[in-house]
Length: 575
Image (tube, rainbow, N blue to C red; front, side, top):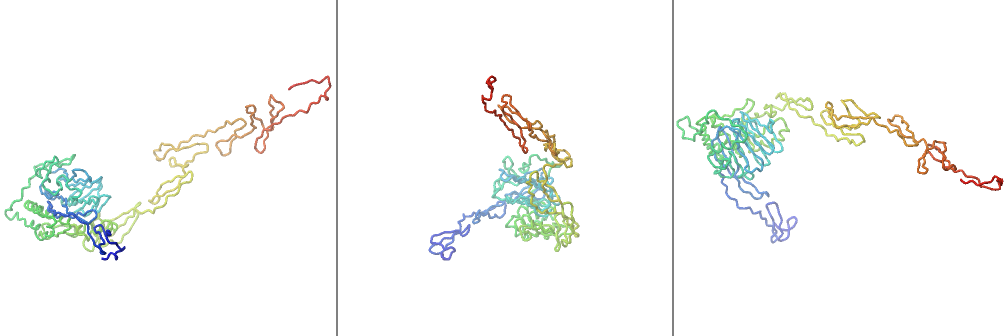
């Protein structure tokens, strides 16, 4: 490719990134592409007999091989550790199958052997599986029906085989009703940091059978030391029977041909993915004790194969010994969907996620026959069509009844969001209420409250406030009122007068008020005040349009002429 034909054209020696894994350089007018150099990959051989998986780098250009951490428990006493070491154990206590040596992700898996109850704890979530013919599951104490999900967990599958997925840590736990447990952890997160009956996932079987004190011993002995503190044990009345090692069968009774299916062409597509060796040994041992129990070994291996994306239809090769029986309204599928389609389209949209076309998500079980649909996950009924539905209101729910399945589904009626009113006027407050099952907000006066459900408005001569104490009946804060005290002592020159329709009157001016020689004096209207020491000055009070004025008048004497006086009578007088 010519450097001038690139958009934009490039100069000689210029380099640029085509994508995360490729760099292009213009050399002598031509574009040369160089891929990111990846380190040499070492060939991985997994101790558990599984094929290694590719783990890509963050940029997605390079990968390295890792061995998966998969532990399984099945039958009456069969265990296989993360690193593939098989052993037998059948004591009845509650044990750690897996816990972290150094807590990083807050994940633990425990098993109560006598009740076959498996408990998975992750963060603040607790999931408990009870296997009694079918599997019941409880999430944080609440009985749930798959499919189920919350912020951290996804629960899938019919009640005969359930899968718990924890996407945040790429972990999966599979539980089957006839007692099969599989724990799948990513090596990148848990490698070298697990302990318990499933051992330490580090691609070495040498330390799988370690006790809590660090001592390595036989797995059957070390397994008994992983009792969960604070749990009680059920001690059997008779000593447990030690399972003898496999021996060469004698006579036709122990001719375990059924176990040969595991190494035959039936399971051949899975041999390169999951080694059948441990299951062959347990199958031969179980068959010589109980033929039916041997079916669990084949089923356990088939489940592990299905988990790795290899579905095996094997039951029809056992001459009916390992037949899978379904209810009369359902049919058996060796490679059925992980989530079966129902009449609830919203459920299908959320939980199916293309499971019908994904081989890795296939599951063995009973499904509705062709031409029918599962009505819902609770009723377990198959219907020819989702049918004509009639709906009715039940409180705040709308319920739909289906004639074919005779079942009812209820959903809460939706509410149309409404903007909150603007209660900014003086004396208003926002009040929440309910109208037709939906939130209704209104503005209510704050000066009007309720006592014992009777309207109450403070009187004009009362002063009321909302107190801190609550009425035990109405659950409203109590109102406290006290009479208003009117101020009737008016200042000099003022007179107290009542005001119509008002609790208190006011002080009204009735006299003129003035100050003389640092003393306050009052004069009634149209009256005159003469100071004792100055009789030539008069002070008069006048009311002009409601305004009070003090008028000061000084008396003037006429000029003195001595000629107007008789000589004998004239004398001087001083004021």
